[in-house]
Amino acid sequence: QVKLMESGGGLAQPGGSLRLSCAASGIISNPNGMGWYRQAPGKQRTLVAAVTPVGSTVYGDSVKGRFIISRDNSTNTSYLQMNSLKPEDTAVYYCNVDALDRYGNIVQRSWGQGTQVTVSS
Image (cartoon, rainbow, N blue to C red):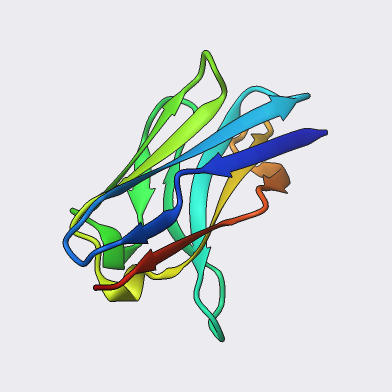
């Protein structure tokens, strides 16, 4: 079983920055994908960013050019650097780890408990 612990959320001003971390522990399969999703009140959970086992990245359209996802395989940790924050970035942010088969298909997804990010002046 994989346990994910997020940290780094909080309050930021518009134009500011925050850095989220997600530390995975337990039985972590390799290869694995890592990512971040967010969910605002009354809205669906949507992809923010994801990184493959070899470091390829994908971003949601609304965060391209502002957010950067990275991973440290030695510590099973992913990071989400959020720059130029906007009020519409306010949401609960969830990290995930995906166990992958040899074809890159997701066979199991684990979620963190979520961390609140609020962007307001």
